[in-house]
Length: 300
Image: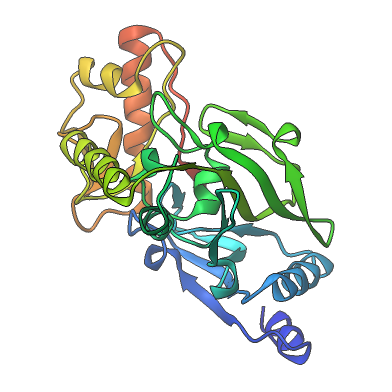
């Protein structure tokens, strides 16, 4: 990895590059071993350079937002974890009520912009932590609304080129967006509606209150751990199986929402992996349903 750092420096890469960076520092679960390399490109040019150098060296890589729906195992990630830097945080609005947000902009910053400019349509992401890039990649939303319903264009880096793709070129699914391997989300445009800042602020606050009442907002979690099975709720099944409060080491099934696994303090990645496995087995035994993980797990 030292050689890669040297190559990047020689070719003008100015963003952060660190070896053996603990992923526990960058993920909401506060667990996870070190990445072989952790790099923060400042703009698209640096990102393109970084990917080119990594692929030429045969080093695997992945892109991380704010780490709110991922788990890195105790052994970490042997390749390079990429976090998009300040050049991907811009948020702009045009005169056609189109909001454009960089992939590294946070959901809270985007909502603040919506309130200031009187644009409605994304209130449903209130209380969902992380970045717009992550929200798009996971098709974030509620039971009634999601990103797929408001996005109009997506900027991606593919094969060394940054380009916009239209909504008809995107395949969204429940909590998922299908992208060709190696494609990186750079930004997105959303079709918004005009409304008064006061009304939008009220909707945002109401959505945050709902999440505050129904989810363990103050705990270290990765959000919903399992996908909802067709026609049912993973949280309901886990609750019905009597698993609330179940613990492995420092990892526990939340007492507030059974589909949240929380770090009660001192948990290890292996605790979450074991707890998730035990929950899946118990639900399958009780109801004949095999739960699929919504959290992205990077195992050793």
